[in-house]
Amino acid sequence: MKHALIALTLAALAGVAVAAPLPEVISYKNPSCGCCGGWAAHMRQAGFKVTEKPVEDMDAIKRRLGVPAAAASCHTATVGGYVVEGHVPAASVKRLLAEKPKVTGIAAPGMPAGSPGMEGGAEPPYEVVSFTREGALKPYARYVGTRPQ
Image (cartoon, rainbow, N blue to C red; front, side):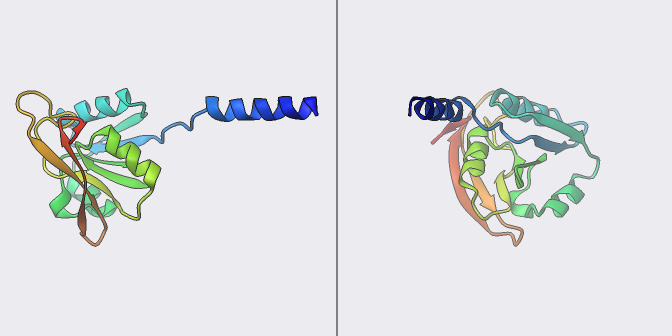
């Protein structure tokens, strides 16, 4: 009985102490874009491993990964089987990975001022949307800078 209790205690402690690592982010970006590196740094600070891949034809990447034109931004990333388009805060990426909705990905359409990689100056509210390959967009989160609203 005593050995079983010790084994159960050790198993429980091991489960609590070990957190699953975050999946790697592959970020495709135009080689001349500086704000994309700022977003990658934001994701690294949030605990993600990020590999940046310079690509000349970003439109081809977006088409291949199913990013609707209405959701487009400057860089396109993949993580955990999802697409992350543009300057999406790490908090929304972590939520996406935890909730696993039936979407292609999430996006911060355009290049919202104050979003990760676009800091400096004004920080007006902006929206993160989810999207499907068919082009359906739905509100996912609202932010001011990297703070949820």
